[in-house]
Length: 216
Image (cartoon, rainbow, N blue to C red; front, side, top):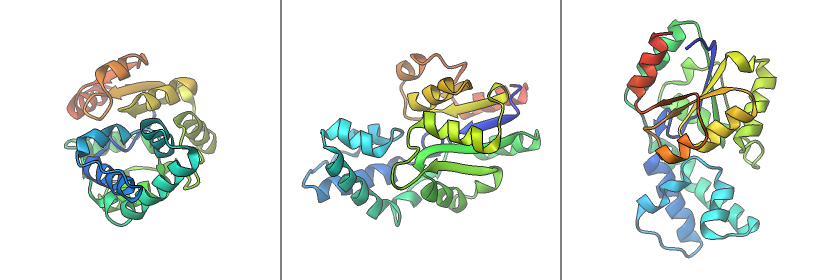
């Protein structure tokens, strides 16, 4: 793994945000008169941009989808973002990468204001040079645009940069910007979803990802 720079997705790659996201989606839907008692039915919201997800999964028009996003944030910003946990093995992985002199960034479609608070609260912000995310108005929720923005802001060479993520959006964003991508199978994307995008690497566990970097 020769990459000098590594970009990490957040949800499903560094942390398991299942409880906080699904409970906040459930809260937003209840505000709109939709009862969904089964949180597992809401896990497909983890990864893609929320506005588009509400429009796709509940056939909301854009105005109603924004209403849902705002209800979601009402709960998420005070409770949901702390209903989260760092995947086992992630902290040692980040320590290794830092010790190898690689520079690390987060590239998430989640608003950066939430992503930075999560990283601060769970004590992994210190491993990253900058945490990039979307704006609250929806700007740069698309991973293609987000990664392009990050590369331009940091002056990075795509050829020496690797994107790591658990959903197709991460892999598409990498490919469209000329980056190699590593898919991780412990997050929320299915093997079929990830394999369809032809990532350069596919790791089923955090440990397998870690071992690949130890082999350099």
